[in-house]
Image (tube, rainbow, N blue to C red; front, side, top):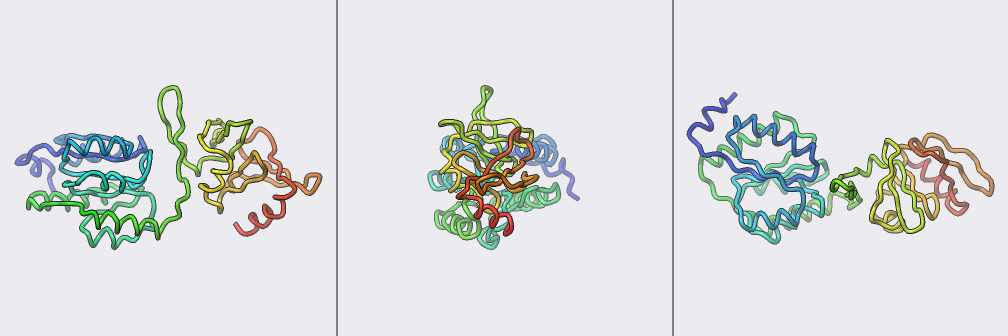
Length: 268
């Protein structure tokens, strides 16, 4: 194993940009990088595409650690607007990507959750390239190839929602939402703890952006997630009463949705 002190003694402080929308993931990444470089590193953290574009137009970090999905869109948008001269290590929770698209273009790829060993191996590889002073330029055709690999490999279902709170923006993962409920013109998402959060989507929009294998619209005002359904009982007028973990009330299918719901449950 390399001694970090010997790596950094003859080198300038590294300047590394972390593009990551999740605070916990970014915090862990910072800790790992500080340990790898014995603190001899300057770290910048950005959560959104818009801030990434602004920052990279006037800054050239030594290395970029880039998640694929940021708060306001895919990181690839940044690389369409800004000429990137920094090596990039992509990080993502999705394992369906065509990894050859990353490998053949000399771009490292780490699958979340990222282990310390995998991150250090990627950093070791980067350090070798840095010592050789290899020039890096992310070409537009490479960005297009990566985008195509993404589009072919993953459905574009919503993975997380940005929730505005008094103290700022928080992220709510789709997998942590038990159900959605509309009240007049306001739509609420209910989390694992039963807390409700306002989401900036209409019910019809949610039908289009949620994974249909996990979410089902029961009626005009309610959408339920499969993993949180605890019990189903017959209800009058050919409807079903659905007991949902975290819900304070029973959800009811509309008569027109009952048959489709039964089929969805059986096929899930």
